[in-house]
Length: 479
Image 1: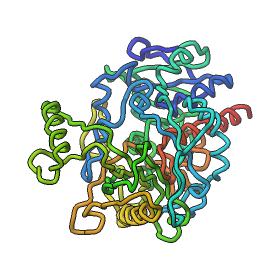
Image 2: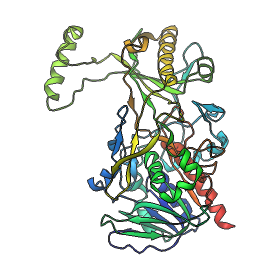
Image 3: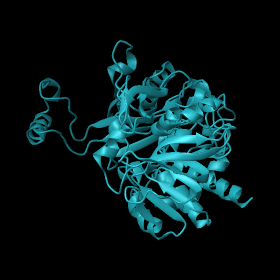
Image 4: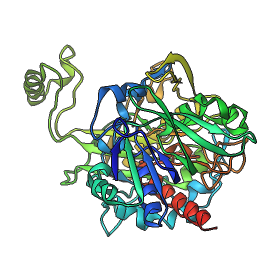
């Protein structure tokens, strides 16, 4: 059933209360509802985008611009409402690294993730043939063909709305904002959560188990804002630690040796380059531009002028117009892993207050020396491998070779870490079952628990972890 918290603030006691109705929260709710548990699914936004809800996501950014305010969506379905649909599984090697950056790697095995891959693929409407590639590896053994599959993409609010409405075991409460997590006197058990509607009236919600599924930045922010959690070592010392993004860097341009009908080539880092060059994982995409595009109020005239310039072959002589590439030229983009660090890219609290009186998140997103090493090493090595494989010639940007030229990096809107999974509280916030260290009934799910980011989009792996958590809680509820 679905109700608006503004109209009905009386919620029953649940077996499981899930906060956040994005891909992770909806996945857990549906699976636990099917298992016969009484589930509360609390969504801070409504059925569609509203500015009053989106404004809660404002972040104080004091480093590189993460565009955190616009890359997350705060209404039913969460960020799946503008997800592009690209999926790539983690690989075995991701789970074998003992340390990544200066933090511990995954405490669970690759097989524990892999067992939920088929179910996650169905949820995300991925093709039955799975993950494919159209090209082979490059010479040298550093880069293999990237494999990926494309979801339509699945919009969780659209796909699962009817199922949520018709479920007799799920209550979906819209416009219901989590403001506080309450513990008992032992500081080991959550006894309730405090929620508020947009009238700012606060109410208590009771449940046996609580799951936070609000996204990487918001999960950390709410933990840090909850005064009763200050006594929990894992929250006090590790909440917000190890935030990661995927790095989007334009490495340069390329020209093919021979004409090809293909318009893109995708490559992925192998264990060999990771071990020999000490770099992170990632995808490098070579793409031929299909058309000239421009943006802004003068887009049409810019596109016309750029086309004229390209046709005359005088692109390099026209500096006043704008930076441009002509159709048929190739550009090289990336999706590279960022190393989690204990004292870098940490989510903390700002002095700024949101509509509900909670402190906003503050994030200083930066690149570490090992991130810069990853970018530059992968750029140089793939340029050599592309040429050695007889595919073409690569021209790298100046900032790849020169430390004195600023290195531009854009985020991929893949927010990960902050409530990372670890063996113990010295390395993270949750254990291998997504349970907060020191508490017996508070869980966190989503990409915030990622110990490493790997080299692929996070949506499919976070659905896999959501399915795994649902199984764990359903099993606990039986005993």
